[in-house]
Amino acid sequence: MSSAGATWDQGTSVPQSQVRSLRDDGMAILGSGKAHGGCSLLHAAGLGYGASIGLDLPLAVRLLDRPSKRDIKDPDELLPAILDAWIAGGYEFPNGLAKEELFWAIMSQIPPRQGLKSSAAIAIAALKALADSTQAVVSDEEYVAMAAQAQIEANVSITGSIDDAWACLTPGWKLIDPRAESISEGVLFEGNGPKADNWLVMIVCRGERKKRPELEDFPPHAGAYQNSLEALQEMNELVALTWNGRGTVAVMNDVQGRKMTNDAILNGARAAGMSGSGNAIIVVAPKVSKPTCDRLLQLFESNKDVTKVIQTSFLSIEEEEMTDAPS
View 1 (cartoon, rainbow, N blue to C red):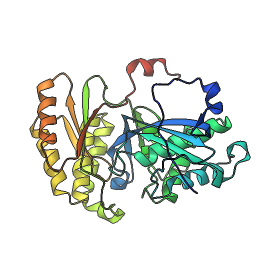
View 2: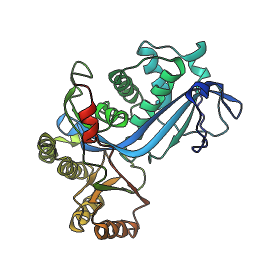
View 3: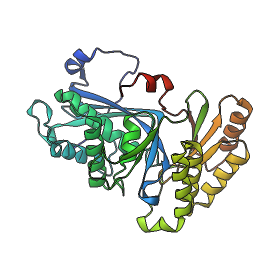
View 4: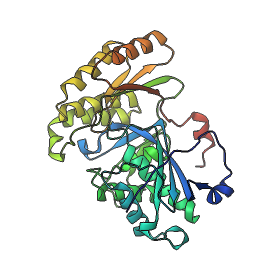
């Protein structure tokens, strides 16, 4: 499938009822979908259980009926795999179009291939765009199942990244058993996440990862992941993030990553660890301590191996949302 991408004016608000009548560079916008990036709390390859939490890194996808003038990169052919997963899920393409007649536009603030769940976010947002284009009613569990299938087919995940898909779709976090018979049964327990107003999240980017770990690389470092799991059972996400990061830098034999996380803790961070399989390092500091935040920011921005530092926040479930949610 040929794929093409475009950017659009974020400042223009368009009623949903009119979105299908819009034309961008002469193309019809068939549907739109949104998702967000995330970071790891427990790498699913560590113990067989995974947990991730969303970050305020927005991503939007549009489904088009013809290519745009700007190409998008899809080296893993994830977008064709998403279309295959949509059909396998029992749904249809819009307007009777064939797979080869569907194209994409993606606007993303998620650095790719750095462990920030960009693939899961694209899968979720693209599936939402397909649902929007056909007015299909799709449950959260179905979105996650199709996103996992697409990522496995595209070989961008060694576990299916079910926890990543949940994190890109909903706020808070869920501990996932990917071996469960169904997506809903795979949710072992869940948490609100750290309050966004309390914590600054720094994403320390070091460029795209050059390799992926193999499943057999993880067992020697099971102790760190066990500590992460126990922290999640106590609803202590920041401790889980740090222990998970320690395990993953050991799996990756990432000497620089280990030094950066240690330096972050020594300079006042409450949590620091590699996300996914790298290379991004997540550093969490209390917003109330501006000197600490400034010191950490200066520490990483002065590091020649750091390409950029993104300041953002967790996408957590606020207590009010939990109270209002149906039981």
